[in-house]
Image: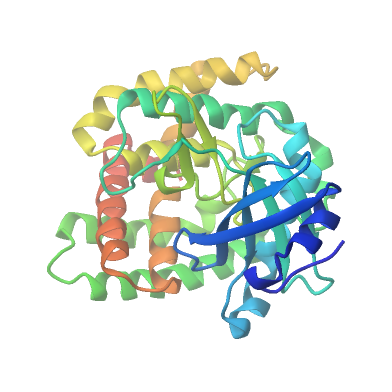
Length: 342
């Protein structure tokens, strides 16, 4: 399988080989922010080929690619080995290739336009929230507690030693987060972040009796909604791991709505997610157990928000987004009594 290094290599000749059909011409334009990888929309003319595709490639910063190799491997392997075994809506993959050292890769993905990207800052409507959680159940339900997932050599699984390391990394990341947003982060939220840090090592390996695929960053900026808002598709599978599936649910709901809206709708959203799980064949899992897991899982919000802020490229929108996500998820943790369950 041939890997390309940049968009200039996406020639008609290369695409003809990749797609197995004649491509006469191609033009491209960058889309997305491109912090971890680089995305391009391709307009293609040819025989028996899609008119548009999204090409996803390694980051232009060559020095960063070795550090990012595990997340590149995650995404390519998701499309190759797992996408066809779950029911989550995600772009169809027309071609995938990964270098032996995983520092370069290429994915040719379905262009889901006119679907519209969610907006993490603005939050979502209850209708969008419903579409997102039902779609999420399509990721979790078909492989719920499937022991075969533990045998995938590339799958990230956090064990006890990893949990201790994560706790050691997370606390200084909280220090960095609090220092960056001095005067902009509420005192109550600061206390909650440090309380989460104190329990992180225990939380991340908690409730191991239920496990499955975890998207890891299932939030509005990584979702595409049909224009009517009634169906959603998930993108960006770099952070896929094995863990408690309901972490994705709690993260999405806790970061996607301001607290008053979340309080009004979270019970209905959890119930809709649970009903969709049952429809995908999950058994012996009650709605009350699901809601208790949702309460427990809310610490996913600060975990991903703080680490994303500490290690991502800083932007003005990013700062506002991380502040909103931290405030929303910390409020959810307090409302739900999450830390009492750790």
